[in-house]
Image 1 (cartoon, protein in one colour):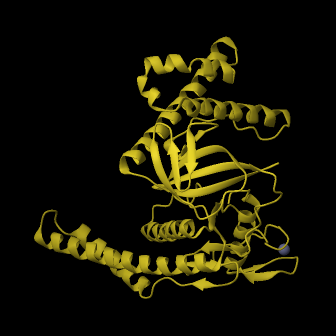
Image 2 (cartoon, rainbow, N blue to C red; image 1 turned 135 degrees about the vertical axis):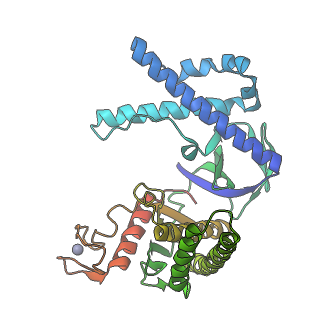
Image 3 (tube, rainbow, N blue to C red; image 1 turned 60 degrees about the vertical axis):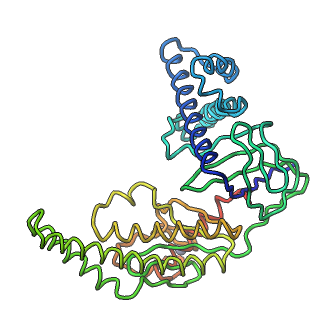
Length: 366
Ligand SMILES: [Zn+2]
């Protein structure tokens, strides 16, 4: 028996979307509260709580906070099970003397889903019946093989998805993507791929960015509330919009090309710490351009049934994509030259590392 997960986009009414978002936030609250309960009990009485003990408390919780009655009971149980798994994983890692990482409280950016572990959902054609939510449509771009075991509803980056975990007797169904690519995001070029393709920034962008800086200075010099300042602010807003439009056009073209050509596209994850801490203007501009490119690619890939993976960019520019040696280089050094004999453009080498990382993380989500 093998487990495969199928992921589909959901279209739902606004009221249903609101309900999904509310359910996720209730589940997150439950997760954090149950974690807190475990921590406190251990701290004060050196006792540990089991999944079953916590599960038994759910009826009481619903009595005191009736809003939890609006969530399917197995969904709530599953939250406690998730916490239990996090605990077991933690102790398992301690036993194996690995880096442990205690189960953490989940912020909104770390909690995107809830799961119906057995019942409460039913799939009929393209309609998915969800208990306490209603009937939603799914964009079924693939046939589902095997028996659906669990149903997970996800809300991420403004999109709604469902994942079905299926048990199947077919072996090794999820074939590796046929064509995959790693993408290194840059300042000189917008992006460069592991196949060596270069995507340039929109033309005249640099000129416009210089102009932008000049305008920003001129706004800050003018007296607040003055007509001259208002005029300068208008000009500045117009230029901002012009640059953003050009950026968008380019991102649309590049993302379309990537999605058409590849089954798997790997980007660096811009949310990883260190990338976002820079407050320079130029950095924030390129940052938003990269984000835009990734978002558009995600969106188009989703609709085309292709996959996008984001990886931690740590060391991707320093490591040799051929042999794994760390070859230290400053930002100015544009060529990667390794003692193993491999010589490559710095960004292409990075893109190749990004691709490798992406390939190593994909599991059986199709
Ligand atoms: Zn090497």
